[in-house]
Image (tube, rainbow, N blue to C red; front, side, top):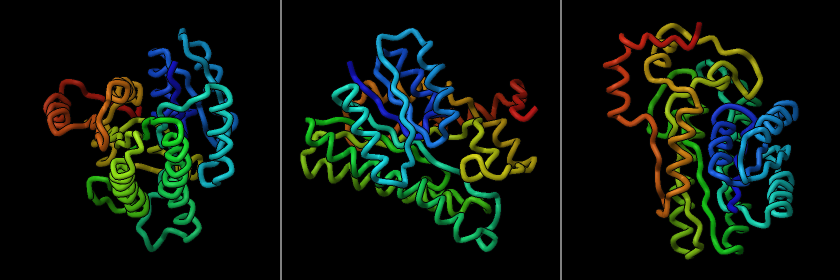
Length: 266
């Protein structure tokens, strides 16, 4: 039976992916820095009918010793990690760059970029030694070079994640490591992430224009997770990119919005 580890998976997109993997009879490791949410997720996942088992581990992905602990405990329980998804990330305060404090910049870069790099570094070596596996990194605003005032640091970190992921895929090929490396591009998701900065930090007030875009193009994470997990399970190609909000899907959403009249902010 295969095993998947997803960082930042006590809520939102990460949690929804774990549900889908369980339904496909994977062993799943739910990991998060928020202990209370981690326990809630653990209890909910254990209620899903599956041949797979659930393991919950608290982790701060900015600390290498905690990443190694996550890997070691997962291996102790399940012997092998087949898929690793770097999903953990935080949003930035909705402010132009000159208003963002240095400590906020440090925290966001540490989690959204450095955390992904540290996790990839650790699990890549383990997978290479154990005969292979797959690593997927979650892209976000900035990965496609889009620009929005108030998201400059977050966008910079996600653009860097894209480059890093492509470089890691190249290294895997060159080293014949048998580790697939790919990108997950979920598009616009309606989660707590869009309302808060730095995890559970200050509340972000969205303007009406932004809300309208979310209403037109957004989806709940459970919808996107089902699509992504199917892609991940069947993928055999290195340097793959799985995109939910394709140009065609976005065009269709704009065309049908007046009929759907979706309002995620009621």
